[in-house]
Length: 340
Image (cartoon, rainbow, N blue to C red; front, side):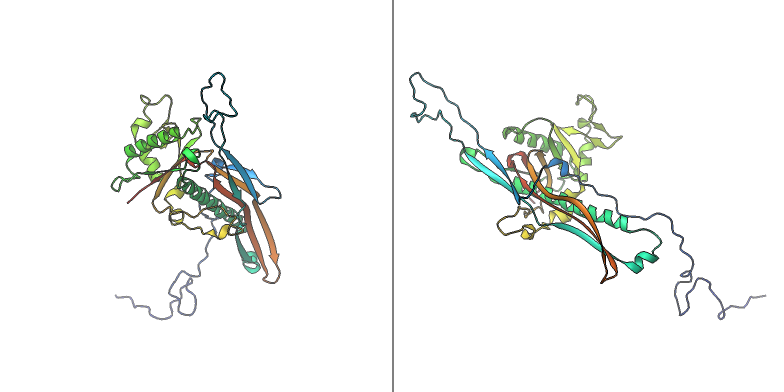
């Protein structure tokens, strides 16, 4: 016996009245007890910047002195009248770092939404605002490294050397050829040596994750036959040093937000008093530098504010800081770029 087809009068407990297309729409959504947020981003690059705190000042001056010269003295020679170059007339310049405008990240939360919501969001929102500022600071650090690498020498006889740009074009495998990347690290180390940059363990390479893990798979850099102590391994996916340069995997280097030159001169308080963050990084692939290369000033460190807006019946959440960055020693920066 065939059963009749029910085409009217069928009640679906989960279907909303009025022609809903979702028969499960009204069923209860059980709160999991966990709020999924973006992975936390901390300041990766701030430890590599020489920060100075400003008090009642708009900028910090860093005097830069040239090198002295020496010569052989002959008996009877008058040092004050001789023009043989035994007395040094020092070349001197300065590098000034200005405080940028206040960098802020904020949001508002309507009171109604806050009251009826079944989980606390203000703490998570505040954390994410801080992450936005941390991310922007790291982008600025990378931009300033690029500015330093593009800075020309200053003074006579290259008293104040400029930065270096290293073309790593390798036919499309620039960030995946581990052997070539290792060779570029040695070339960068040689460049820093020629610029008298100290070999004191404070040399760093900021690499994209793609380049970093390509180097990690080069067994020469982790094999105990080639390294004095454990330098990393395939088990951990880490490698510490190559050519005396510490390696850091930083996703920002490959981020289009960094490479597409997202900053303008609008960050400065005046047109003449601003730090230069504007540089073409579309071809940038990595940086090798010494920690003395960059300087920064802090007027106001990261702080938070929460304000009740009575006219909008909402909460205003705000994270902010006031800082500034500039290259101090361009000769201590090597930028890797792809010329194609």
